[in-house]
Amino acid sequence: MKLPLQLKLLPTVEQHAVLRETMRLCNAAATYSAATGYAAGVFGQVSIHHLTYYAIRERFGLSSQLAVRAIAKTVECFRRDKTVCPTFKAEGAICYDQRVLSFHGLHSASLWAIGGRVEVPFACGPYQQARQGRIQGQADLVLRGGVFYLLCTIAMPEETSLAPQDVLGVDLGVINLATSSDGTIHSGAGVEACRARYTARRTRLQRAATVAQMDGKRPKKIRQALQRMARKEAGFRRDVNHCISKTIVASAKGTQRGIALEELTHIRSRSRFRQSQRARMAGWAFAQLRAFVEYKACLAGVPVVLVDAKHTSQGCNRCGHVERSNRQSQARFSCQQCGYTTNADFNAANNIRDRARVKVPLVAVPLRQLRLPLAEPATSPGL
Ligand SMILES: [Zn+2]
Image 1 (spheres, rainbow, N blue to C red):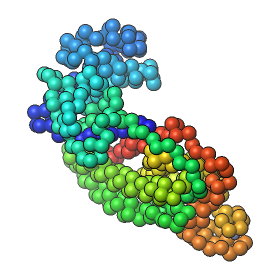
Image 2: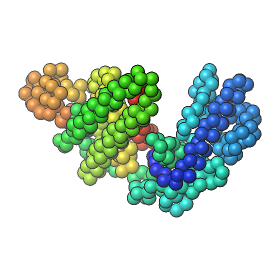
Image 3: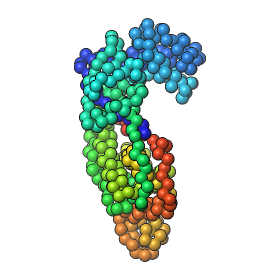
Image 4: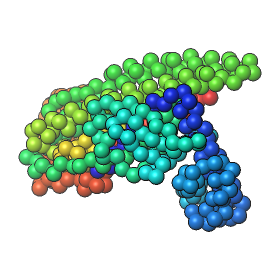
């Protein structure tokens, strides 16, 4: 299975400047090739190459491979939409392949840059060390908050799928992020507290930005602070989701069980997300947790069973009675027919497990169809 691996580069001040300049030139070259291609009415790799390759090499001083990549970036844009001529941000991601990027040992990468290759060290903990030999093909060089990262792709072996003896039902939600049919509840309280803290700070900063704008200043510092905050918040949620998904998969694997989840299509109607920041973040985090459970299960050889999500939260796990008022509140389930009373998410997790049990023999999701874990959402600091 292919997974992303992020390497944080640790360039010297000079290397940082050189990489930045290289990035600017590549993006300028892509913008140039887009404009030229658009003006001439050609949109393919070969035709734009004919028009612009030599000019790019001369004008921007790029290596042959980076010139080709710059054109490829343009072509990718045209593939989506030929009616607009794209321009690229000066510090947008640029793609490196094996001809312009190589790894030297465990701790440094050699990248082609303006004025010759640079050998840049990167941060490498045990996680990166264990996976470095698996890096494949090309990588994207990105600049985020002044820090360079290489986003690589690694190929991880999947364990052979275990033959599940039973299933572990998992109910994913917003208040409780995950509740298992074993009764383990991963509360969203920590995440919610973090969100509330950041929201308060965001409001303060946005107010300050408005004041600055009224004074005729451009609040660049404030905008950067907002972006930094959004990244931190997303990082915190991602950590939480990694921990929860790891626990769930380990518990299923340790007991020779598959994992049962609701079919994805149901989320929107059930959670009734509104267009608030809170809802947007919750919806994204929810999908991310699910993606993490799926890919970790896949790596560990734990089958994932998807079940119909209809009425999992309103149906009684004891007697099967379905009624909306069974769910008395977000937290409480109390069956109007048999009186069974329990935690609402625990009841739902049990329903999910039972539905998966009926699917005998347990059929796993085709593992190759799994998506990569979601990246954090595009942040709009609201300025
Ligand atoms: Zn009942």
